[in-house]
Amino acid sequence: MNAIAVDYVDNLYIAGGSSGEEAVLAKYSSDGNKVWSHIKEKIYYSSIVVDGENNIYCGSGGSTHLVTKFSSDGKMMWNTNDAGETEWGAAGIALDSYGNIYVCGGSKENHLMKIPASEME
Image 1: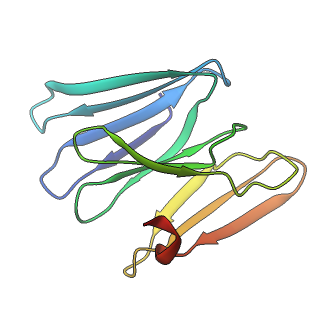
Image 2 (image 1 turned 45 degrees about the horizontal axis):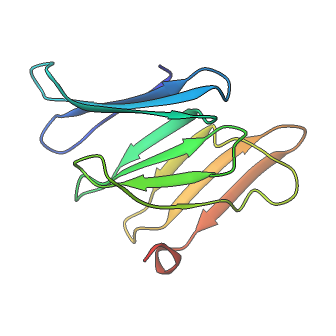
């Protein structure tokens, strides 16, 4: 695991994986009990952030889905790949107060990308 986030009621979310082989996303209650977990093949999660409604956003490294949004119960809501022709990983992910997503990362170049909230519906 290589990414961790906490929601407003102190649930923990961890994400990670093994170099494009499989990704793990898990939710733990504030007392450390596992609530749910998912494993997805051929991808790995390199970053994670939780919004004010406890939706989870995972950035992926070197995959077809740069950002994936999950509901608080772990259901995938949407994903996007705006990495362009060169695959690059989302090493960092953040949300602003307007719901826009910012993703940074790189491979041979450094990247910073904004995904407007209006594109996530």
